[in-house]
Length: 301
Image (tube, rainbow, N blue to C red):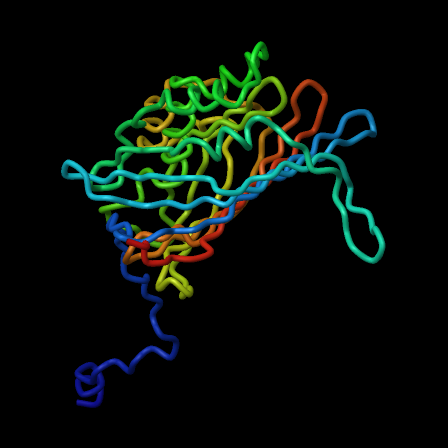
């Protein structure tokens, strides 16, 4: 009787609560309409070779507007302010801090003269660059008579500008929208970084870390790292991303780390920081790029 009674008793609750996975996070691409999104963008590069180092820092302020267009979106972005500083490291000057010297370039004038226009699908997929020839036209307007700049002409050519804009957008946002994302899930995109007269290619792996409250609302947090080769047991999604990018030769030894934060409701790229390190032709390159949302204001009419 005692054994039968004991067998019929309900098991006591566990002393340690069972861990549960956080619910999936879903991002829908809903950019702000009739608003101006202001961001600061900064890129710092250092190259070390034979005990010597060179430092360069570029800063931009961008203003972006989204407009519904043909069932999708038109992104229009201008750069009202930009600057380039070369030299370093930082030194104290009269109680302040100076890093190198500011350099005047034709690039600053070009950026101030043209508007980058990108056609996006309803789900945030990159479709095409509108009027890609406008950057090259702006370059020809700022060059003095009789002056040629073949490197800048290649940089601002319609083909190069569209390729670069598409790659940058996809490295940040491909695979994020209109799908359920779970903590620990990985998403891949191929990215390329210019270093000197060449470039390094790598697979950017984005891992879902969860959500975080920001001044722009609840946001998805992604950690970033680089892959310099496809692992033997690469998942199909990783292989597909590399194949879609044209199966580029990945740069051996390239490493990177960083974080990206994107709001869950209205699309706001809150912040993104990525530091890439690579050795090219005997020189160690360290490039840090960061962007931060600085304001979302109603557009003046």
